Length: 579
Image (tube, rainbow, N blue to C red; front, top):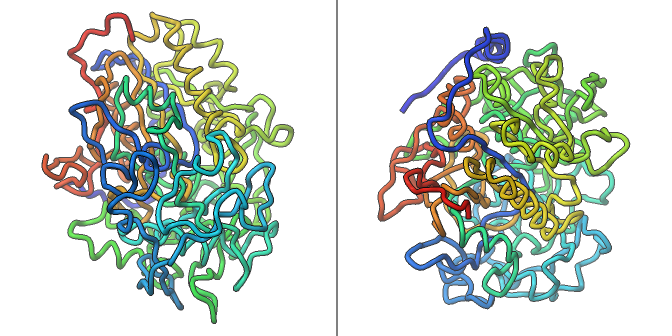
């Protein structure tokens, strides 16, 4: 396995080499796939959506039902205790695997934090005050389309939630650390509620009628039950990994710099508290310098990596004197390309210079677009626009060059999809906020409808559909529980499993693929399909494809390893009819 130890200044030169290279002859794809469309929903783990999915005959799956954690009707199964949530103790320095102290006697009542039409400051009365300690079916209590609470999903919290692979501290982390102390719109503090309860343990049930369109896609095409969010944390970092296979960092004039103190994460416990972080939250801690074990939050994760039976990628992938963004920020560029002022009160990521997939595609002569809902209306006038999901907007290479024209509003997709000859080879779709499926302010039904609409429109153009794959996935798991295996790759992740569906005439029919994947797998597929090189020396698209033991297919023998999605397809089968 290759380990790349390239110094950061050399890495910073890579995007300019890609963008300003001499024009090249467009390459021909090596598979029949001529168009890749990546549609991204928000904040659902695999078990949250597919926990009770029953695959077609002859297929196996790893989920709540197959493990006996729940029954087909959503009630506790014979191995329900395997998912029981525990309490723990973290006093002093941050520990990603704190010692457990007991087991919850019952699941604390969920809150409705962020849910439209619901109070967030009292327990959600739609759910019982005490439920069995483990996963619960959301639709036993509310409809599939109901607005429900938003679980905690931040970087240091997610490391603790998964607890080194035990997956048993989702509730304790939500109740002890919550969203962190720097959240002025919530009265959070030591001894006060975090407005979470047991919301993270909720799941939908395809066996009783939930998510019917996603079930139809799984029955008809190919899904992965070992696909993961690449970074512990939320939307920005995981969209970023989808575009770069890497993580962003604080810059000054394009080079690594030091952010303001209030923007630096400090998950060490405040005196006299159990796991109440010192500096963290949506108006505070965002960056971490992970090369120095003496800095807050660093030693615990690095020590965890050292205990692995394999060597972490690039020894953790932490360059010297670099403050990496591990939580959410918006770009410093507006959609029009204007540069906004940055500072400790702006919560904007300064312009980025590492290479992203658009740079690589342009250098290889492969057409691409990034469609974002609400982009035409801008950041200030339309809350539907998810600036942090419009990932190329973070980059100087795109926003100061001709590729800026590749960033377009989602409305343009509906025009472009009608013409197979001019439709881009690679495209990404970031939805309007209200139809992203994000818990709290959006409903999963709205993202289901968007996915159905996009796929229906692609199919309505036979010339396009016959050589296209629509990859439907989610940015990250949103802090929901998942029972799946998690591979530690470097300091930043991986995180929990999330859904991935390959919708294509060439997708294996009703197939469940167990190969280990994360967002870098999409990059690897694109690069393999168009014979493009990895994006940089430190991006995860350098990792090898997994070698697996058929008896234990979920854990690569050659860790760390990430697949290229090719196992989802059967390129030998005819694509007649495009069904």
